[in-house]
Amino acid sequence: MDVFKKPLPIAPDYKMRVFLLLLFFTPNALSCFSQSLPYSHSKLIRGIEIDWSTHQRHAVGSDNFALTWADDGHLYGPWGDGGGFGGTNSKHRVSLGVARIEGPADNYRGVNRYGHADNSESTATIKGKSWGIVSVAGVLYMWVHPDQPGGWGNWGEIAKEARLHRSDDKGASWQAADWAVTNADGLVGGNILQYGRDYADAGRPSALNNYVYHYFVKPNAIPDTAGRASELHKPGLIYLARVPKDQLMQRESYEFYAGERGGKALWTKDLNKKKAVFQDENGVGMTIGISYNPGLKRYLLTTEHEFGERGNFGLFEGPTPWGPWATVSYLSRGKGTEFGHERAAEVPPNTFYWTFPTKWMDASGRELTMTFTGAGRGKDNDSFNTVKVNLLTN
Image 1 (cartoon, one colour):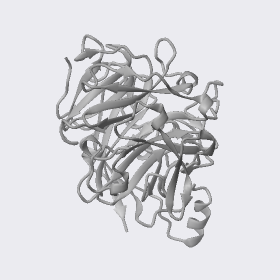
Image 2 (tube, helix red, strand yellow; image 1 turned 90 degrees about the horizontal axis):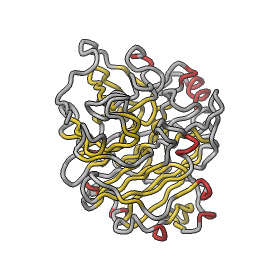
Image 3 (tube, one colour; image 1 turned 135 degrees about the horizontal axis):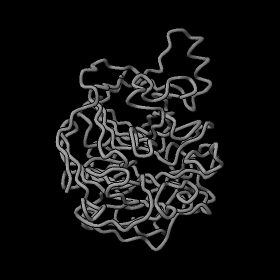
Image 4 (cartoon, one colour; image 1 turned 90 degrees about the vertical axis):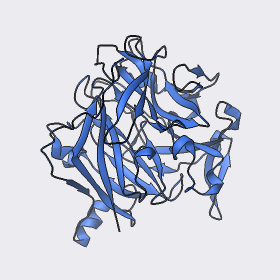
């Protein structure tokens, strides 16, 4: 079994810290730019600082890597289209695998828990993709989207449904639910809010303790230049569902956010009454990252806009899982500010799916580790990437 330990970061002699700040020094400039933002700029977090000298890249040829912090202290997360850690885009390739990430952010190693028989602890059989996994009471749950034969990530197939899977053995085997969330429900995707270890965090409001929160997108596939479906959807609506922690596999137990009354969230089981918790007219991606930051008592949401797989990074913060949201950073390839543009040789403009694992947040909530992936077709950002970031607070 191939593993790695304490790998060297890319370009270790490159120590310059890069500031990605949506901060303007003239009122006119701020006013003009704000018109393109889905939400006004955050008054709490004025931007992020990325320390590119800490960038690590592994499992080249495998992408996605949603992560959840399990009860055993490790991170677990699915990858797609590759051989995982120790594999390549072709060597030990599976459609969907699950990795275990052991150790701290600056000294971790990856182990293939579920993947190819030649380099994993158990053999993968699922054909599909995933961007949503969570550990609750020692059990892993994962949303799985179907894929075409060969597992190359066809967005048209992926958008058809999201089916929840359960693992009682830390990802070694999976059991599928007998129901799915489908395009006919007016929903695509399947992303899960991350709290602390095993979905337990004393810093969150007690009223939220009994539920697991899931995020979906209103489907409206935008064709790419080849006429295929994309992961980007317009008009850019994100919906929120909740389910009791002990009933995740029961479809009838899910409720959807239906607005607020008197400052209190309303919930409904009628899909026709659901209301969006986030909207960006520039579109949103199916690959949404959402984590609770206990140090700042804020929810951090990441998604794409304008064009998929282009580095169009959006980071937003809010006081509850349903907002209201404020913009921290909003980067666009068309404006020359796409994610990683200052390190274009190592981080080409094809990144997507940025997340903040809760295990790798410091107590203040300001020093985090970000993971991201990309579309590199077996090279560069088509991999597991980590980098240290600081949230710059007022």
